Length: 305
Length: 305
Image 1: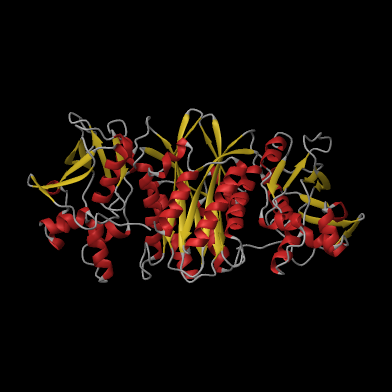
Image 2 (image 1 turned 90 degrees about the vertical axis):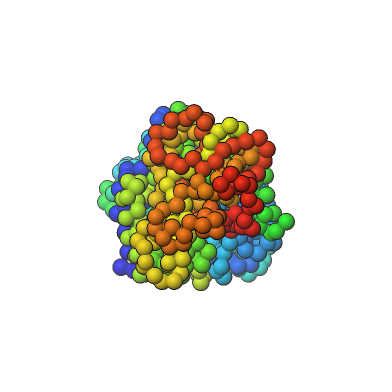
């Protein structure tokens, strides 16, 4: 075991409270009085989660969106956020604050508190805690997929990958793709609409294949994905094509923040989503292209941390 | 204005929700259904909040205690914590995890979630979110002190200062003092017992004088402190004497995590606490030694960040 997996195993052993969901889900789920609280904390670090040259306003946007995306996967309505911020360069800080104001206004979510510390280090990191209240119970989990269900995803996949390639190349190219990478949007209203209909739900933060594999493991089922059913945007197809390689790359790159969910085969969904596979007895992932089983790519997604 | 105070002013402008309490209190206070949630997020950074040579288990202990101390000041019972952790050296991480397990067991508080990121930087920082439920309403605030109240503090002050001096000198000297610095204890049961009796309450994290000044400002009153009434431990007196300089130092150094509170003069308190002053009309702090007013020391406490 690596030092990192040792650390995470030690954390898991401490997280024996049912509200922690064994640290295997996106969020903590706390029953309190008549309400069910949803809590998540995600961090971002320079050179790991953002390029040094990134616009600090985009960093703020993404930090809020990735946390709210975890609430979206639970069908929660956000109550507010707490910011953990490392002070450094004044211009960077100011631009981050401007971005934070914009993103919190976009979601109509209040800043409730947090902490700022001065940094003695050469790299920054920022953290955010988001708290929400469940709008539907039981609260969707990764672990509820059942054999016979269909697998769905909201929106399109791969746009953040294409946007990252544009950012790395310092091209402004295609606005939709840059926006997908720099300013992802948490699917909060979709999550609330879907919560009563799904058997399992999670957000795709690390790549469809990696995250679907986690859902299969948590649910103790096999998840079958039709790669030719993968929803790709027109902009993505134009830039990267829609051959099998391009599709597998779109399926194994993170940062999409779409909702991946399972539902009974006869479900009538309240929002548009793409059916891209099914759930069967067994374990792990199985990929198909035009009905023919194909091998898994070497990397299924973005491996933390 | 410094870049830092500009940033904090920008945050304050975003924190217009009443639950944020204008970022002027220790915690956020969220009304939800029949319950009142208390939320806090405090960070610690290497070379700012801990010495490089510090035992990582002590860092974990302190991180949990400083956050739970904020809950204590609200009379809250803790529901759990979320950890934001920067992975680095495997031995450091393991020792931190051991310390985290010990401190969470001590308080019987579950780890509910969080995030770990790898660091590309040369210094670490760690963050913790603590969530609690109010045990008494209204929830005590800094802003409730009223003219005619008495001012009280739990425990003794200055022990963490003396413990820090021992740590800097690499002396193990006096166990109680080292423990006060390395392993402070959040006064959770005291806070819950006191909540129904107090008019204002906060924890002393940055020094009695600095924190009492904040209470005076939030409450729009003058707070008068009798420096000769300051509670000092026998170990502290033995190491640093109990003259006026020693007393003023104990009153202007942080890390004590005692509870500072005001209550009506005829109150019958449910726990032991030291009366060390009173509340009057006016503003700011006034210090007295044997009944004679004395000037404020140049530093009132530990100024973030």
